[in-house]
Length: 375
Image 1 (cartoon, rainbow, N blue to C red):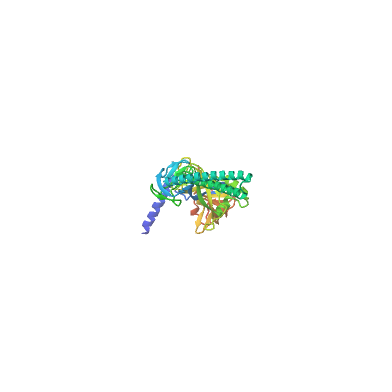
Image 2 (spheres, rainbow, N blue to C red; image 1 turned 90 degrees about the vertical axis):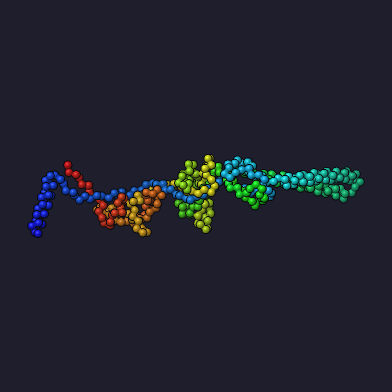
C-alpha cells in the first residue's frame, strides 16, 4: 500500500516537472478590481409625470331652450362642425303661431295708441280754447301713455316670440366635434334634455392634480404672487403620452394652476393646453403629461451603486487602503431608470463602488494594483 502511494507521488512530480520543462505555465490566481467612480456634482433633468384627462377648451353641453318635438337631427356622432352650423331642429309650428298672435296683439295695441293720441291732441286744443276742463285733458293724456305702454309690451312679446322661434333651430356655438347623441327624431325634448356635447377641440386641455409638495418644488416659496404667472409662462413644454405609449407629436404649455388646495385631496388642479390641428385628441381620453424640470448642482450616481436593505439605501465607499465601507444615503429617483440623485450621505470627491456593488462585503479590498505582464 505504501509502495503504491510512493509511485503515484513520483508520477505526479514527474508530470508537473515535464509541463514546466515544456514551457507550459500553470494557472495563477488573479485578483480583479471592482468598477468605481469619483463623486461629483452635475446638472440633470427630472421628468415629472402626471395622470391626466383631456378636455376640450370649449366643451359645450347642448340643450334646447324651448320644449317641443325633435323633428330633425342634422349631425352625426363624431362629426366635425363649424360655429353656427345647424345641429337640431324642434317643431316650429307652436312658436310660429305664438309669433303670429304676438304680431296681431302689437297691431291692436298700435291702433289703440293712435286713437288715444288723437283724443289727447283734440282735448289739448279744446283745453287751450277753454272748452274742456283740465280733468278731461289729464285723463286723455293718461290714456295715451297707457296705450304707448301697451305697444311697448306687445312689441316685446313679438321679439320674445321671434327668439323662441329661433330657439327651435339649434346651432353650434363653437367649432368642434359632436359627442354622443342620446335622442332620436320624434322625441319630446325640453330645457332639461341633453341633446349632445359639442367639444371645441381646436385646443385641448389636459387636466391633472398636483400635490402641494410638487408645487413647492416647481414654484419657489419666496416667489411673489405676481411672479407666479410669469413663472408658469416660462415653465418647460409638456408632452402627452397616450395610454398605449404613443407620444402626441405636439407639445403643450401650462396655462393655469389653481390657487386653492382641494381640502379632500390636498392637491391643486393644473391645466396644460395642447394644440389639436388634426383633431387626434378627444375629450375624455386619458394619458400621462410629462414635464422635464432641471435640477442643478446635484450629486448623481448610477442605480447599480445603491444597495437596498429593507428601508435603507447604502453605497460602498472606498477608503484610502482600498477597502469598502457601507455608507447610508438618501436618494431621489430621477425617473430615467438608470440614475439616482443623492441628497445626503456622500460628498464631492468620495470614491464609491458602482458595478459589482452587490457582491462587496464590509471591509473587503476592492482596488488592486495592476500587474504588469512580463515580456
